[in-house]
Length: 434
Image 1 (cartoon, helix red, strand yellow):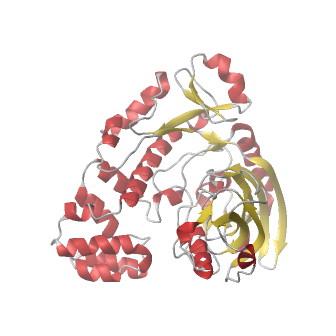
Image 2: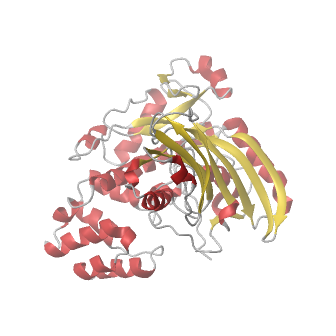
Image 3: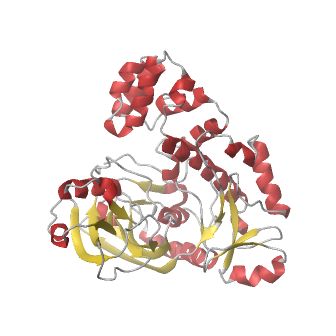
């Protein structure tokens, strides 16, 4: 069985909205079928056009690994395949892909392990990230006390009424929980810390060849470390080779890091700072105050709150929500009490928003993010199969919302994740539906 891993975000000890309800121990993803995700498309194919839309069911595969396997079977480059969202490897997921100038019969005839083609149609444009309305989830929570179903229902009532805390989940921060620290070091131009965190400092989450590579780096055996990194860590291997070639010059190695990877690290740091802000407002995430920048859930516009009392009914009806900062050079700042909290976080980090401008070759604009999200079509029932008893949860979330944030409120720090068999996670990515 895979290692038991608590799913609370490691970057911060984050408080819970349903703190008055005791933790309900449970486990997810004991089998792929325990975590089922189905995309809700933003639009349906029109039936004509140069692009073939095809819906697949994949099991135990990361989205980009599935795209790679399909591209290889069709003898095309993987970038020619369009997709609306990334999905977790440790699940059964249903999602739609697209490809231009392809015989639909070739797509229908695909036979690839862990991938099944469900439907094929035509449309006029390529699918792109974001062409997605949301995701439906069917999740089986195992190893939980059947006598606690009333408590589960109580948590779900809180989340339905007040919203789910819109924390960034653990996967944003990597298996070691340190991607935000790398991003922080990038903003501080601390090249040594960036490289040391990427390549060394072995910890309890490191195993096998990864652990060996980190130990070799710590011993200064950069060339051997480069060879030890598994294929999925080719960025680490490349940076190790630069360390070997330059006799350990961290600045040279820093400039060898792929620009997209650097931006991912900085994004993780932005996410960490947002989580800190939300943690401070967790028990007021459904109330706006003067100076807030509020999010309109119907179309995503943001406006400044001038009269909190006048806006209170809209917040209670889940029409609007307060937002938190994704710090960046173009982010609109809150005022009043919310603005003071934002400034206190920046001051504590010895940062200004202009610091996000000083990263060569990277545009870090910033944004506002609602402090909560709505959970819809919520249902719960108890059941059992050949693998034991479970509580099955069914609900729908908008695109980009993390289902594990719902589960985290139920289980608190006792939520465990692990498969009875190891998934094929080569080419794994940050999922948008966790």
